[in-house]
View 1 (cartoon, each protein chain N blue to C red):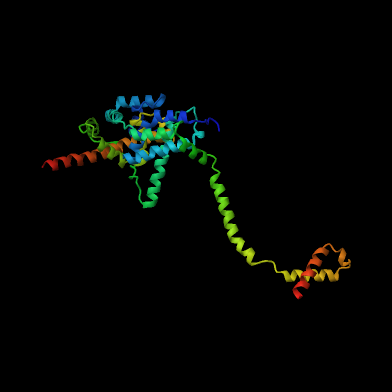
View 2: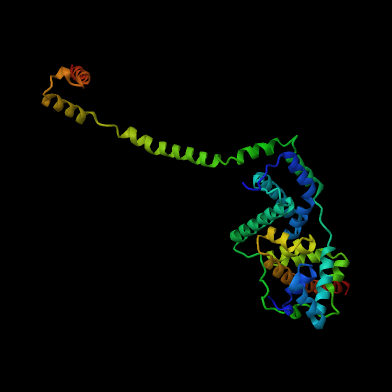
Length: 157
Length: 193
């Protein structure tokens, strides 16, 4: 426990915040110590003076604007703000949309400029057809083979 | 959420009617000027409304509102300090400073006299010099008349800390007030001469 001389106990006593043992301790000390009684008196006067400081009232225009903002009748803006902010989905949703856009911008041009070259595929397909033991007409990719053949003939012509 | 409740517009409008003056007075004493007090009150009500589902209806609304208001004030103070590289808080007093060193003798009671003469401007000036946590403790306990327990909820600290801050705050306020009032009285004499 703090020493009564330290002062905060006397402040608390003046504020009516002490009970039980602490209160008895301070009362006993004040009965015996003139300087602490003097402090108690000064703190009490100061407390009364502070309690008498005039209270500021909210300016009428500010009160009116607050009441209008949160009025059940004309609180449309506040309701809108509230409905936007409460679910708190707009920030992550916006971030996801931005990320998707950035990915699109990043990968989009790369994919178009790096199209898969056709020649190695055609060469692989021709090798597969030549080396396969299955008759060409029965190959799973027979339709593709025919399309490739006809395109090759057209290009030669 | 345990204790949480849903406040509709009608209830919230009632809270504004009931607690706006108190919130404004707290804001004014914390910030020291009307414009900041207006901003603080508006933002505190906006945040209270936005987070109204967190309000515990078992507890007084004004305590919750004023704790929001103080947090808004602290946020702004920190932002200002960060942006400007300054500290708005004065140096706190030494913990072991004796009240006898700070309080003047029995004959001088300028704070009581000046307050009785409605020297509110000087009082506000002296209050503004105090570090924020002493200022808040004094405004809540001495001006608003709240208990240490209620003040502790608003300030987010233990009751023992409130007790210490109230006491140190009173000593500091008295010191600042006397410093200012000496200057003010000196100034008046100079003007007359």
